[in-house]
Length: 590
Image (cartoon, rainbow, N blue to C red; front, side):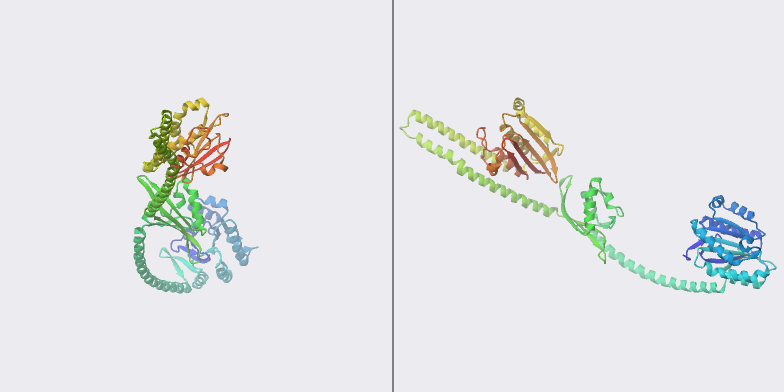
């Protein structure tokens, strides 16, 4: 506390620490006022409680007038009650007698008042021109006693003594030795007169300062050398940091950006739509919809749970870039988390190879299924009409065949040929799915697609009073093969209409929604339904029919499933007899 410096307002002295007790020798009233007004002005302007003890040749009113003239805001300090002007009689005497013990106690009391009024401390002055010879020794003892009293307190005391014929050399020495230092005017300017102890202390401080400057110069050279080595190391590290193909972003414990490399800025623009800036709070850089999920991820990493994931960031002129992202806590020597290290590795090439492998694998699975279907068709569906054709051809070669039998055989032959042609056409339609898989994907708006499909059913919809409930608010469009999606919509809507319950109006609901990176399409009706407990495994089979009283050949749902899977999606069914059927189609939202 005592090392805190306070301005004295006296240029030759400057700033001094709390607990300083010094004196001023003056010759004229003007000399005294110039010092004291400057002294108290500095005190008031620095929020100190000011106490001025006057002598007979400067009255309380004169002191007030001098302060008001020098301090524009003096009335403000008066209203606060932090300036007090007392006469030497009121301060030093009691019942007409000198009472120095009371004066010492009152100094401590004024410090208490100062601190209660939220002042920084106490600044006091006493003009001792009233002293008489008989009181001299006691007063000098009083002055000496003030030094230890205020040494550890927020007090500054300036004592003023007049120079004149009555002041002997011994008196001046007594006064000087009772104070830490003395200010006097010599040759028209103020000078500081120091005691031997102060001079000795200053010499010691100067010597220590010289040693410190020498040591500082040596340390500065060592620091410059170390800084040069560190600078080179940092340059090498920065070169590696910026040329690596891994994005690095370092955050402090408050998620402020410490540093990042060039590729990290590119990754941040792809991932979060923002450029990085050192010193900025990373969360505040993000768009509003990304702040909460990213903050949750960062909090998990700060709690010691590393975060790892893969993500694809679309580009305007390409399929996008894949990154493997890791967010790991950075710990100090005591294993306290002091920040985060975020790294992102571009895995586009390897991910493309992985996706291609998966595509080929899925394609092989589909082709194996197709082969199984073809084997089934060849072994079952083709065999019967082909056997009939062969048998009927042999019969027609017989010479003794009657005209009636020949006409009947020819009719059966034509029917078998037509059946065979139908099966070949079905095979061709199935094979077409595999051939069209490379067709370009495009933006397909669901509402427009439904309108196009329903155009072919308008008359039947009006005639049978069929109601459609369409809701595509959850997902308005998708990028896919339009011809496949048209076929899927057509077959599912056609199935609902074909297998409607005749006794109640048909209601078909078609809705869409997004979930993660998929779009879910729901087709729901109140048609005749299917007993899944008995026929569930056969629903999407080729040539599987569940209502033989209605025209059909069991190809529609097989084609729907084949096309949905060709698009990378899945289809499921939930159905109850006489209640209705719901199909859920999940497609990738590319």
